Length: 309
Ligand code: BDR
Ligand code: CA
Image (cartoon, rainbow, N blue to C red; front, side, top):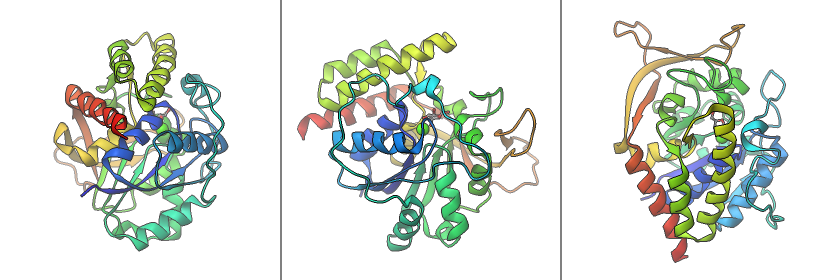
């Protein structure tokens, strides 16, 4: 049976691929959107573009337009002005099912057993849902998020974008007491990179999602190379989906993770207790390794299945 998930996202190039992967490998109960890579109006429109592309049988629910306590910050230098720069932008015909992502999350978790929350953007919606309905923490199967790092950051030396953009929300999520909280941070996602060969293989698959992904990666890889001189651009967000569907390609370790919300130079850092003698209880399964080849083959196989539809 496919895992039931709510995908909370801010598309975003890698969010878009997370949607493509999740639409085949999981039962998406709904997509919720959040202010992050671009404004929530654009992340919602982008989620609708993807929902149409993969013919998703679930609604898109618009969420928070700003973080809990700080002004919104975006990542246009990474994802372009639309958040999905690259492919030709078609007008969407679908509309958002609701503009209350938080209520959708609460209701869905209360109505269904074994729901996974999969946040791959700033954690605002999930934090507000927890604050409004703490019972959901015990109800869910777990949370598998993309965020944080057990190493370097990407916005600051120590902070990763999703946590940095709303550190107070991230702090609520990490300290909520989830029985299963999986973290795919930058130390992991940087092992899962897209390069020119990935783009070629997608072009060979040549169905609409494959072509869309290839055009996304043309932009995403180029923009990353200009900023970092890196050869591969990390495909962050699909890792949070694959962590649920293919845990065997990852290695995770139990750790205590807390979020720095105040620090002048460390705000948005995920502080991971690596001490073997730690007196802090583990609250998180931190991802340390992914088998890139296996992960990429799963990705290509998933994208190929769109040719059968
Ligand atoms: C995260 O930030 C966003 O730009 C990506 O979509 C990903 O979720 C990586 O730091
Ligand atoms: Ca994202």
